[in-house]
Amino acid sequence: MTNQRSFKTRVRARMAKTGESYTTARRHLINRSAGPDPEAPPAPAAAQTERIADDLLRDRTGQGWAQWFAVLDAASAAERTHTEIARHLVAEHEVPGWWAQSITVGYEQARGLRSPGQRRGGGFEVSASRTVAAPAARLFEAFADETARARWLPDVEVRVRTATAPRSFRADWAGGPTRIVVGFDAVGESKTRVNVLHEKLTGAEQATQLKAYWRERLTALKVLLESNGDNR
Image 1 (cartoon, rainbow, N blue to C red):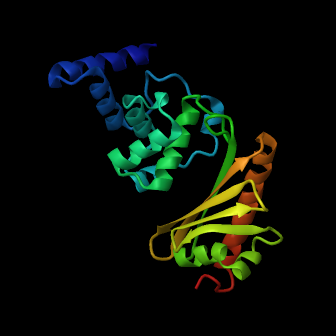
Image 2 (cartoon, helix red, strand yellow; image 1 turned 60 degrees about the vertical axis):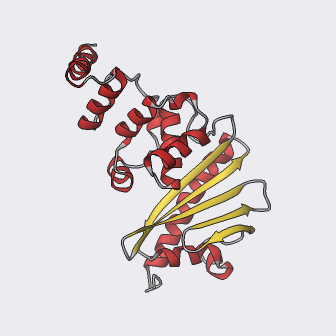
C-alpha cells in the first residue's frame, strides 16, 4: 500500500509540472522505470508461464512487458477484442504482426481475460518457438518442402493453405480442423526464430499434448539444421 501511495504522489507531481492527465503522467512514469505498475492488480500466476523474455521483447519491439501493458491499459484494451488490440499495436505503434499478437495474448492473460492456451471466447491454441542457427529461407524450406518436412515432422498430414517465402507458412493439420500458423523472424544473417501457433484445438488436454509435441519437434528441427553442416 505504501508503494502505491508513493507512486500516486509521483504521478500527481508530474501532472502539476507538465499539465498532463493522470493516465498520461502515469504511463510516462511506468515507461521511465520499465518496472511493474504499482497500481495494477497482481497478475495471475498462470499468466507468467510461457511469456517471451522481457529483454527479447524489448529488443524486437522497443519496449518490455510492463511498458506495453501500460500502453494497452491507457488505450482501454481490456474492453477491446483480441483483433482490435493487435490491430491497435500494428497501426498505432508499428509493432510487427506476430509480435503484436504475442503482446496481445500476454496482456489478455495478465489481465485475466484468458487462461494460458485459451483464446478469448473459449477456444484453445498453443504456441512454441525456437531460435535456430540457420537462415530464414532454410527454416521456411523445412516446413514448405514435403521431403524436408518429413525429416523432422514425420507421419503427419499437412495440407498447405498459404506459404510466403521466407516469412510465413499456414496449413491444415492432420486433415483438420486444427491448423498451424508459422512465422520466421530473422535474427541477423545466420539465425532465425521460428514461431508456431497451433489453432482451433478441442480443449485443454489437446492443448497440453500439442504444447509438448511442438517443443519436442522444434528441438528436433534445431538439431537437424545445426548438425552435419545442414544449415546451408
